[in-house]
Image (cartoon, rainbow over all chains, first blue to last red; front, side, top):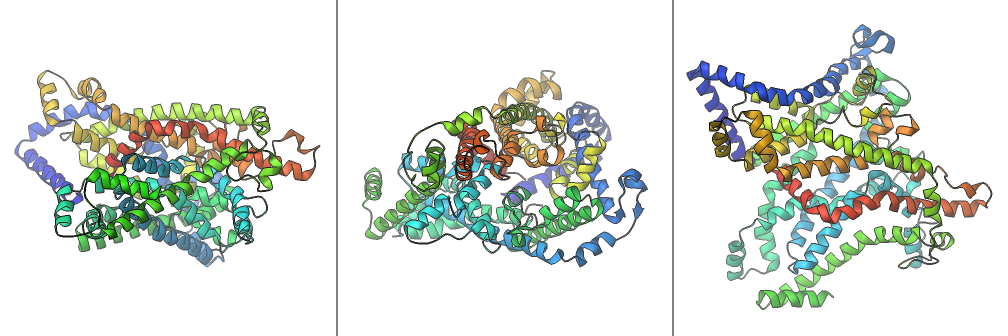
Amino acid sequence: MKTNEKAKKEKAASDGVAAAKRNPQKRLRELKESGALYLLMIPSIILFLLFTYYPMYGVVIAFKNFVPSKGIWGSQWVGFANFKQFFSSYQFWPTIKNTLVISIYTVAVTFPLPIALALMCNQLHAKRFKKFFQVSTYLPHFISTVVMCGMIILFLSPSTGIIAKLVGIFGFKLPNLMGSASAFPSIYVWTEVWQHLGWDSILYIATLSAVDPSLYEAATMDGAGKFKRMIHIDIPALLPTATVMFILRMGSVMSVGFEKVYLLQNTMNAGASEIISTYVYKMGLLKSQYSLSSAIGLFNNVINLVLLLAVNQISKKLSDTSLI
Amino acid sequence: MVQTKSKTTEKSTKIKLSKSDMIFNVIIYGIAILLIFITLYPVYFIVIASISDATKVSGGEIMFFPQGINFKAYRQLAEYRQLWVGYRNTVLYAVVGTIITIGVNIPVSYALSRRKMFGRNFFTFFYLIPMFFTGGLIPTYLAVQQFGLLDNFWVMVLPFSVVPYYIIVGRTFFSNSIPEELWEAAQIDGCGYLGFFFKIVLPLSKAILAVIALWAAVGQWNSYFNALIYLRNAELQPLQLVLRNILISNQTISSMSSGAAAVEAKQMADLIKYAVIVVSSAPIMCMYPFVQKYFNQGVMVGSVKG
């Protein structure tokens, strides 16, 4: 679906160029008429320049020793000193490792599960039950991150939490999971699954509902059971959508969301929960090391960009589906 | 339960299921029921725990039904001023922020959907680049500081109201559902770009306006990151920051904690946490089933971007 649209766009663009060559006067008229459209864009352009593009210029402080009183331009250039300081700090490898562990674990679990859920949901034929199933699995998506983390901490409390009581029935004793570094990635990932599994499957469910019913009929005629129909019709139907979603996910492998990790972090699990974004926040805003912190942020940003472009290229070669 | 379900399927399709298909159905419905339970039980538990007796909740006696029903926790919350200040702020941020978000992004979507706009590719790139590269936390913070927006009401609603994703979703909607013929007809009747937008496109686009307004409002309701970074003044704090203080930082709001025994205070603090979760999430949870179809639509429109 992406390739089609892209081809269309290219055609439209080349048409436009050709038209312009044919008729420069017409082009001039287009420019005049576009004035009204520019008017509509002015507020957003101003906001974008001030709060998005201006900070992009501000990134140069990663290469400077930023002193607030001297301003961005007046501060002294230091080249890659800030990057070197980060690479050689004892925090470098742990934060990178923690970021990657949480991130890859998250993708490995939260990417395939919504697809599986959609395949399953597609097999539910009792209409009302299906509706109820969807509404209830979407529900947790609307719980805010703060409340979600509050719930996690309450439920996992080894003395008063409901989970401790539930496993207590079976004679197990729940360890203090929030205080253990090794449990942190799993807590993060599986609560993420609980909260977003249903929601993330919407797209796939919709894709499946667009599958031509005659395909199923033909397969049934040929003696394919429900399971075989799922394997040979539903899964291939989901592949293009899944590829695009996968590219998008890979582009942000190095950027685990700050909000949830920061809220779940405590001194006991910091060994596994200190990730790049929480480190940037602490160094930058709590310790006012503006330049160092910007350098770390920039480093992270560039890696994300490279990853996105790389995955995009690979997917273009392999399957003809791409974003850019 | 499981078997009746598969029976109804059988009846409705009027096709006799093979034995393996029957087993398949039983497994599928079994998993579905289990998933529904896992999803809904924690939510249900929070509600019953918040109205139960504090000692029984922490003793693990509450499982499926509330016991010793009382509203002590809610009464204490009602008297906790900071919570309601947060509530008021969040409602303000959500309303103002949503209006600004719609007002800023939708016109851009429309402009970019016009094929004959001069410099269309350039502007598309202008809005798309930040999806892939941004200045990062610190440079953005310094910019906000420089423009004097720290600890200011407007920092919550203005600086980050341009959202490339919303622009793309809107653009896709406009180019797919407003036929080109309509524009040609309007042009013949002497309608310019602006007239067409306000008189024809907007009235036809209520669905997409609703989708983006919902996204923006829920986003404002649930976010705490910007407030954490840019706001210090307690009078400006949104609900989520107040919640964070109660739920994560264990700030005590209970007036009785000084006099009562420590254990009892801890139990009451937990109860207040359950209650505050209910109070803060109820509006969205109650609204959600009614507006769910708009969210679904949004996910669909958003997925076909180019």
